[in-house]
Image (cartoon, rainbow over all chains, first blue to last red; front, side):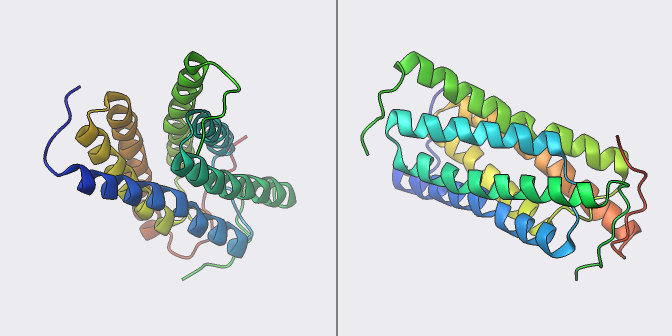
Length: 106
Length: 106
């Protein structure tokens, strides 16, 4: 596949850094939301199992090819995804019916 | 950062492919869950806005550096993330109280 020369390499590097930052920190508001609502019934366990395993593989890959940014971004994402996974398992056990006990969040 | 030579380059390529596959397809069970429950109150709108924008940047980056795998994986992820975002907006409007109207899923 040929590179698309819409922007300069410096701009593409900036776009890549923005991409990594956004996809990594996006899991923080999800973690905060689950924590505040004490509910994660709408969240898929299968998603977070696959996703966490995938991010773990990205982390190993980043270490393997010596890419600090890939390793660091995926270490942070893995920590956030695992925290969401642990809260989901905890809250689903408390309220297995699927009825949300949580107050709405504005 | 120096590469970690635990495995051969071929094994690291395989780990990278596994990583991309897992993090991409992980959003499919989340989409199916939201669709079946008709509820997405536990899902963070902020997460999916940041995440979708980040994945869009990865897609542009992949096209810019001419990486077919990065572009393709992120095109699929973007489609899945946007579908979840649209369903969340639709279901939250129907039931804005935050009380889950959904039946439990086994």
